Length: 200
Image 1 (cartoon, rainbow, N blue to C red):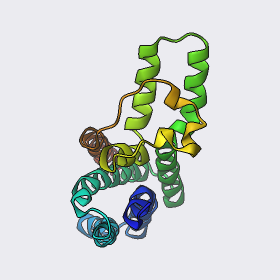
Image 2: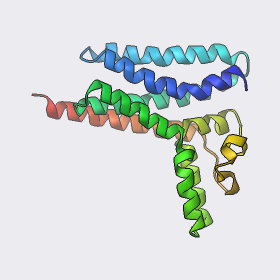
Image 3: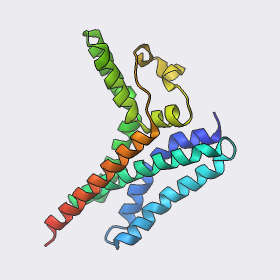
Image 4: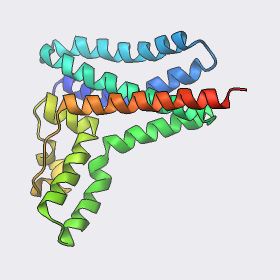
C-alpha cells in the first residue's frame, strides 16, 4: 500500500477530529473566522494528500478531495447542530468523533446483524441492500472501492466477517459525496434555526 492510499484511508478520521476541534477553539468568534479555522484543517489534509499523490496517482486526488470535503461538511454540520442545542464543546467533539468512527466501521457492527438476518432466511435482495448501504455510508470503503479500485471485503481482515459471501453493490464516490454534503447542509440549517429559536 502506497503512502497516498494510507493517508487517504486515515484522512476522514483526521477531519472528523480536527474540524470539531477547530470549531470548538473558535467558539463565540465571527462565522467567517470559524469557517477559516475549519477550512484550514481540511486544507492542510488536502495539501498533504496532494503531495503524497505524486508518489502514486495524482489523478485520484480530485475525487478523494470531493469525498473528504463532503465528509468535512457533514462533521461541521453535526458539530454546529450540537453547539446550537447548547451541548458542551467537549461533548460535541466526542459525539462527532464517535459518529465518524461508527461510519468508518459500519461493516464491523452491521456485519453480525446482517449475518443473523441471513441465517433467519432473509431474501438476497434484502441482504444486498443492507450490505450496499453499509458500504455507501463508510468513507473507508467508498475510498477503497470507488477511488482506488480495491475490493476490501476480500482482504483477509475483512473477509473474516463473511460479507464477501453475499452479493452487494459497490459504492460510488460521487453519490456518497453528495449524500454527506446534503446531510451536512441540512444539519447546519437546523443549527441556524435552533440558534435563532434560542436567541434571547
